[in-house]
Length: 198
Image 1: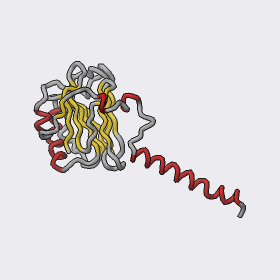
Image 2 (image 1 turned 180 degrees about the vertical axis):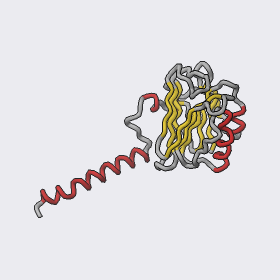
Image 3 (image 1 turned 60 degrees about the vertical axis):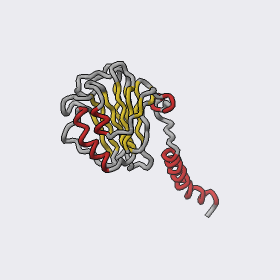
Image 4 (image 1 turned 120 degrees about the vertical axis):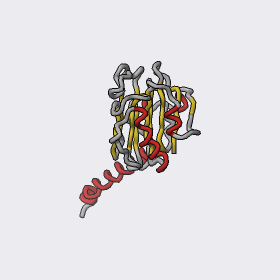
């Protein structure tokens, strides 16, 4: 067999290996070359909101005023305790009682404090999920309008390294730590409080 024929036989396998290694590098080093600029804003440039991760998820949600927009994004696989608190506390921000998030799945929810049941918008899946609201767009059917652009993305533990992105007005507000990441937005579009719960 000539060298050219051998090269032609192995070329597809070499190309496949390069693609697989490239995708693995994107996951390992958290590289997202195709992401929009607002999703690549540095956490160091985030609003200087309080990090209230010292309380429980239930206490954190209960501490916010009615009408505040609440964005929840899961990174990886939260603890069983946090997952139960998430399931019990989602109704405070307008989630349907029938939503049963799967632990380890990608999950995001955008709602408002004390909104009616079923008015929040949520996404769940095995791969990355996203919710994007434009300025002036209603958050689900809560009656609360987004004061600025809001982007939420989640990757659970099915794709290797998890990710929880919450961008408000082009500024990174997520702590992006493993567990449930939460950002609370006031009517002027500022991230007034954020936390993560492992």
